[in-house]
Length: 109
Image (cartoon, rainbow, N blue to C red):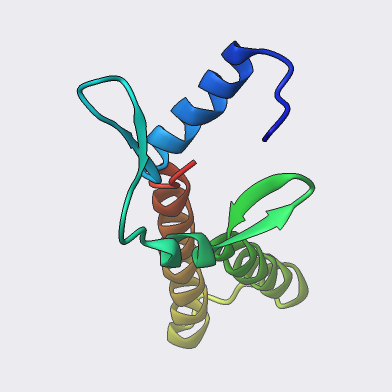
């Protein structure tokens, strides 16, 4: 027994499980657990202060911090090496942030 305070609270939680594709609602209105749930999706997230955050977020933050630190510490030189370093950093940051946003949009909860 779950001891929910009201039936509407139980219904709310069941609907959240339906959105996560962990439970389905059949034609008679009964809820049925889904077989073969893909839990590997949850391994791509970390709980941080009560929120599920994509792991990519931490990589994106680290790469962005490294790029900004590089830009602040080393003067920007318009040499091929300087331009390549900044360009590689920007491209890496963009890729990581795009993947972070994609993971956030596709989150199962």
